[in-house]
Amino acid sequence: MIAPPAPIVTGFQSVNAADGSNIIIKGNYFVNPTVKVGDASATIVSYTLTQIIATLPNGSQGKKVSVTTLSGTSAYTSQVGTSIYDDVFYGNISNSTWAGDTYNIAYSDNPANIKQGEKAIKWNAKAWSAFQIDNSPNIPSASKGIRFYIKSAAPISNGIKLILNYSWAATPTISSETEYKYIEIPWSEFGLASAPATMNLTFNHAQGEPNDIYLDDIGYYY
Image 1 (tube, one colour):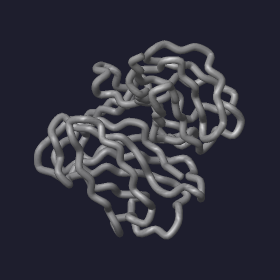
Image 2: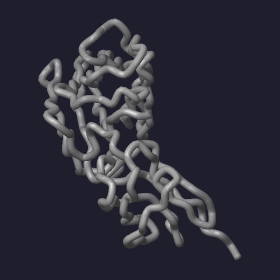
Image 3: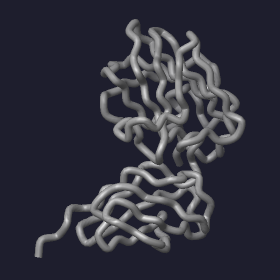
Image 4: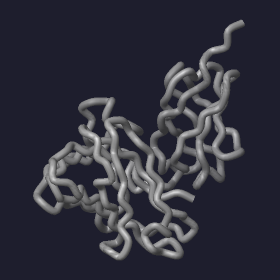
């Protein structure tokens, strides 16, 4: 008997789903799967080789979703209930740029530019400009830092500064590749000893060449 490849989980929607509601898990090689959220089993409503619809059990918030088959287990990076963007922005968030850049917070043209769900943020970044996430909802005091996925049309080497809550006291710098990259930044890298009340976040494209930058599944982690 030849076993199928190990499952691959590429995302689930909605990251902010409530306990008892259904999520759609996407990926591949879902052969006779089981789903867990943390250590609790989720009820599978239906599945195909590339998609599972499952019901979140009680106590799912802050836990990771994983899929197990005969060939192994795969878990998605983000924890349930921890996104401020996962196809839509939550709360009263607004957006702006420093140089009048165009952007689309519901980009859906090319699936290759979408990491999770059905939409992503496409930012036509001008040189030295920035994309701002303002009016952030409250952030749990137990959270450890920010997290997101990022890619760009052309690679960016240490050319994106992250500014948290409009403070220039500590601004971590990251790179971006032409494939989606998962980023976690602990609060300590922003000079903080604990979680802030909000996460108004600015992505500063600190380079002299314009670029198309894609962002998806933005939030915090425990």
